[in-house]
Amino acid sequence: MSGSDERRHVPVQGAPCWVNLVVADLEVARAFYGEVLGWRFRPSSLDDQLLVATVGGDPVAGLAARRPGLEPASVWTPYFAVRDADATAARIRERGATVAVGPMAVGDGRVGLAADRDGATFGFWEGYTLAWSPGEGRAPTRLDLQTRDVFDAAVFYGEVLGWATEEDIDIDYRNDHVLVKVRNRAILSLRGGGAQTSPLAHLRPRWLVNFAVDDVERAVSAAMSAGGSRPQPSPATWTPKGFSRTLQDPDGGLFTLAHRES
Image (tube, helix red, strand yellow):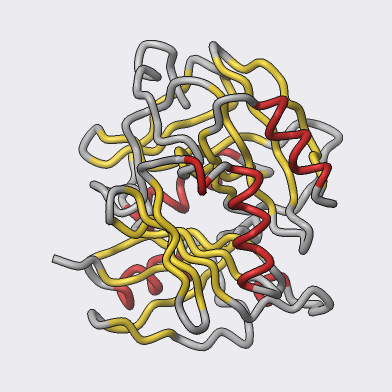
């Protein structure tokens, strides 16, 4: 989802195809993520206020400037590939959720922005994409939905995104979470713990975007020095490679750092 000369990949329908963050100050965000995650940036041909973050020339994520007059919270948002943006928007509304933006034409595709029934923000994209997938290269290592009811969320997203009819997607129901796999590789999970009434943004239902780094504590220190913060309470989560940490960028955008697996 950047320049039209690159957007030639046919994504797996219903799978995440990009992540994006809308920020108040594009240059502040650029400096912050460049320092913490070592990203470089190039402009997108879709919009002069949209940057594509890269590592080693490979696309990682998007940063976009907030439009004048709009003041939504800065939220890292996953986008899912769909065959028909209008039909997807209709299914979202039919199931009691909200379509906030679109679907509208962007470049040679169509895009929409929505919130699920518990308020977690997500997008959907009809068209070609960059060759990008969670867990591949320097793209986010995984996407997790923190939600109120795991199995209710699995039904909602499964129906909206057509997971059951896509032969490349498998749904693995566990005791306390759901894994979504593409060709046997886990790309996202749905997990409990989201509290709709919490006054703290990082405890409410939301999509978590997890970036892998070689040294989590060094990256946390860089984030603090660059104007980031740690939401409180912010318990560390143990992984086989060490602890993961949830942070806020200078505009309040929440993201997670975890150790890169070799």
